[in-house]
Image (tube, rainbow, N blue to C red; front, side, top):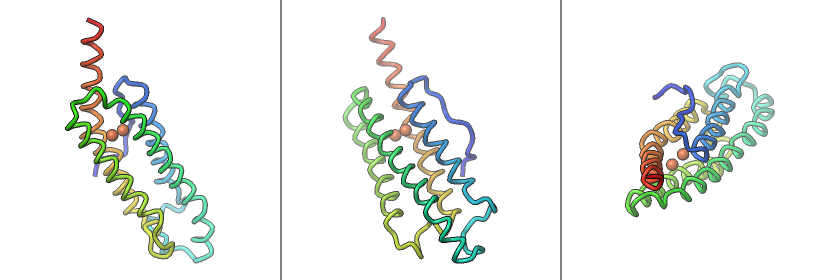
Length: 150
Ligand SMILES: [Fe+2]
Ligand SMILES: [Fe+2]
């Protein structure tokens, strides 16, 4: 697992701003439990109920910001050849599917109970996805833009 460090900067505003918003939400989710627990098992049912609403709201916000960011990013994929663009879009669709399925699970069993799982999933997509997929996209956009200027 990579450390949840600083937001990568590609020098492309749409990408950088989207990633900044996502990193900010990730930080808020990871620091949500004031008691610093990994899971909710140590807390009473009442405390868990109190946390449920604001935590779910934060997750929903993350989902919306993520969809908006995917949409913005995909509008830049005209810079890519069809195959890598399709593959990148497919990754977005897979991430969306995982997140959406987590959101609709039964409240008693859903992963909200397990913050370690949340960290794992967030880390996977926010960090690995940016490195594997967004970085080459940013590079290609810059290359194309530089060619246009010349
Ligand atoms: Fe992406
Ligand atoms: Fe991205």
